[in-house]
Image 1: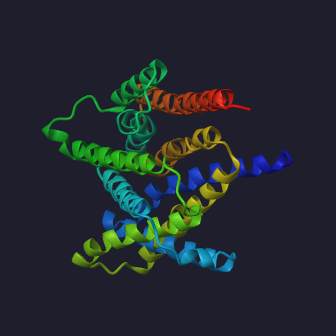
Image 2: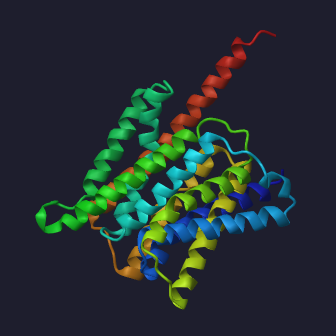
Image 3: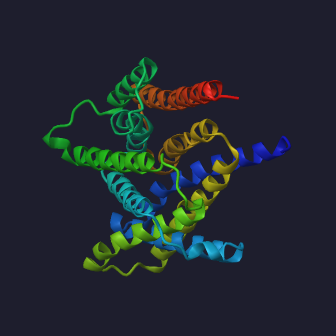
Length: 301
């Protein structure tokens, strides 16, 4: 592999993160309920993935029996998306996405109990650092006068927990290809939201259809496709670090398009969350490398 190839895959990872960040922007402009926005994002994304698989010689992969874990992940994906869109209806996009990016650290804490992956002192310090950072991002008070904000943080917390569950389930290797898993998860998520869409049917306007198609293609399909391709060539720590372009892009979009800004204390808190998340990835990567070295040393020749 030449030196240009890793650079190209790094660019795909960055593009994936930036495209993921556009969902909040499109959701604001679409002005539809969260379940409708998420449904169309999943349906159009699944349709694009199906077409891509058919025209790229992967038609045989379409017909397969999905695992229960993949189906559950589709439910988690739907929950993550709909809760995030709901959250940005009440709070700033930056605050919502920063809470969601506590998910990698939350996943590490869950894995401590679920998969017996013991946390070391560095992990604990990073989790505490991220929690302090999030505390700095919170408004000075959450009382009866700003119950809307409290509701927004509640939905953002649900989105973060759904994302954590999604990551936790994906820690186990799967027999399905990344394209099969993505197609199934998008489809299952859409099916989960279909009853809510039918319960309150809304016919989008021509302009809203334009935004919905953009949601389905950009953060719904291209972002996932770019991530799949990048993950096949980049180390997990490299991809995880580049993924933090998403909250940075969200902050920029929120400031430039909607006039949402963070004060100095909130910027410090956001920086602490990003720093803790990136460092967590580095620590976990080193732990995996050490385990691999020890297992090779203990393997009889």
